[in-house]
Length: 110
Image (cartoon, rainbow, N blue to C red; front, side, top):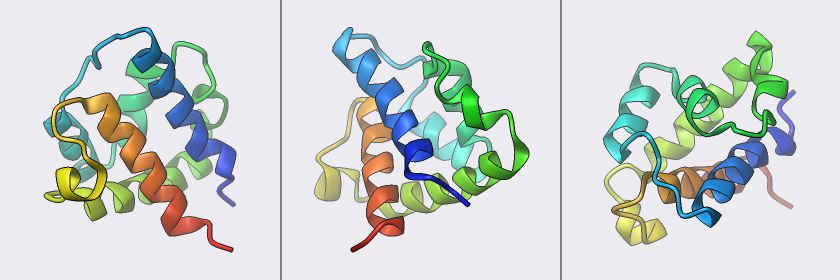
């Protein structure tokens, strides 16, 4: 079962890079291509996980596959509506944060 901490770990990693004013080593188009190829978790794990918090769960195929689906669904919900829905259009790390927030909205309700 997917845990909220798995989704937020992606956001924490993106947030750390944003705070250091670093640019993502990938583009917004790369994010969507990774979604299509079902390798978004790998893209994020290999490029923004300086702290190792994504690696804690991404090494296991079950949690990795589940989060791949959850993040992919969230990204697809934003595709073509990034600016209107999330105010994101230029920064791939900001898109990652928008995907994390969308995934939380889609999967955790009260």
